[in-house]
Image 1: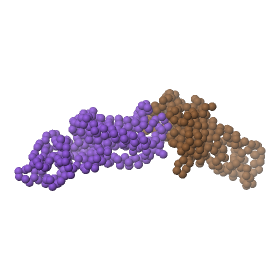
Image 2 (image 1 turned 120 degrees about the vertical axis):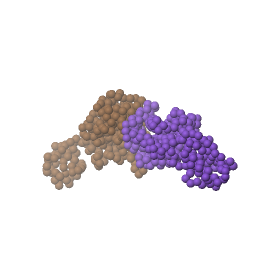
Image 3 (image 1 turned 90 degrees about the vertical axis):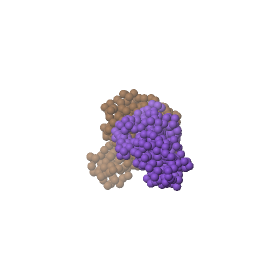
Image 4 (image 1 turned 135 degrees about the vertical axis):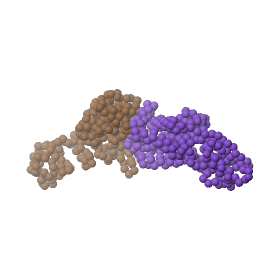
Length: 294
Length: 340
């Protein structure tokens, strides 16, 4: 499969801190690649180096096998985590202004329909809700019919409904053949949208692969959750719990029936027990020892 | 490239024109100042000014008792033609030359000239008076005539400097520049669009304000409108470029405001917006020449008051063009898109 993007040994040092510490990865054509990690992990810095917005201390970025340059700027679409637009412009004028900056232009009507902006075209871009604004910023990222799209924390601050709608939008874009680089600290988002992920922490990639593959490698079964307050003192002293977090004990087991039989004499209230599949959040917790949203 | 410049140019124009408060301020400030000063000062300068024709820049009072008269400002000048023109326009109340054959020139239609002449003759103790008199005729130039280019220039200066300098810093601070950085737009294209946008807008505003005050106050216009328009355009480009240097790297609006004021206030005071720098020391006059506004006002006043032609103001236009080239060159070189 053709490689759209390749980052080689990226390093970004600020006085007293290394924000990105030897990050390398590649993105095959047509996939959604997720760069995950907690706030401050170095995701945004990594992506902004790739986008050419900030310069790396060292390292290289290749786009279709060539150093990222003028062609990359023409063919990439970018949605920043936080960005301002020109004040006093309507939604339509904002899209048209950015569209004029590129040689290749998306069809305006199709773009407006795709991002569901029909009813907002004449509205001042400062008067949009969070979800409407994200749809406009996505439209701005798509004005050049990009072959590669960067979405940096696109659903941060959105309500659950708006997040779901945005996911549908991203999946429709991907279905058209574009490659996507998504940074997020929402694990459910990565699990729904990404084919391949890299988890970052403290400026480094700590693991990389498809979400299913990473979970299969790490976990051979299901997770039993129960409140620590429901356990007897006897079981609390046994060191077979996976994690205790916010008063919840998580136990990984390949045989749920057997585990429940063993647990039942030591649990004071079985009504609070939950059984679920391991997810990326468990994986991150397992790998780094702290939660993703801290 | 032109499509990208035009897109940013158009976006900035819309932003400016739809920001009604800023737009109104840019239009109203010069009108209010011109009308206010015109009425408050009754159309006249409020001091006595006498030109002293001599080669030296220093007035030596011992030459003649008249030079010790209080409440008269004595201005040394070696340019006789220019000084005589000012006497004819009532910009100088009297021109005097001491030496082997002392003489003076006065405009008989000037009331202030009449009183200054009396003071001169009273100070001359020789009998009969050993100083020859020559008369110059011409209409007075009101203070409104003289100050109009100054206020238009000052408005242009503030609008260009703050309108570009402050706005670019705001764009940098709120991340809009960073967003543009991720497009094919180059720094040169962005800067060109900003210069063009502000230049067009401020030129239109200046033309409107000039036309309105010219019609209502019947201000003097001796030269060509085209030449004056050219002075305004070249001057606006120069001042926008100066604003871009200040905003090229700054990330704080407070710092930008301070830096812009640090340039604007000396420029306003030394360029002759409110009063003429004739009589000021050579250091001050040379210092004033580094400011674009000085060249704009010199050229505009020459055109409006003296009927200067394009050829006459060419040195000022060349100076402004050279300053613009230097400012844009430095601005493009040190320009930074992001905050860090």
